[in-house]
Length: 42
Image (cartoon, helix red, strand yellow):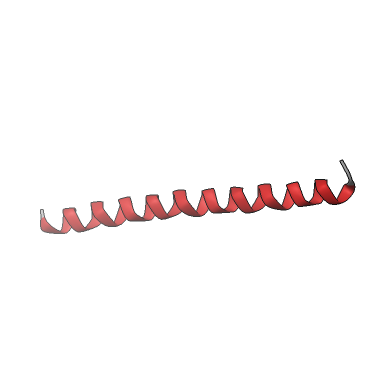
C-alpha cells in the first residue's frame, strides 16, 4: 500500500463516520420532534 492509498482510506473512513453521525443525529432529532408533538396534544 502506498501513502496515497492510506490517505484515501483515511478520508473515506472519516466521510463514512460523518455520514453515520449525521444519520443518527437526524433520527434522534426526528424522535424528539415526534415526542414533543405528541406531548403537546396530551
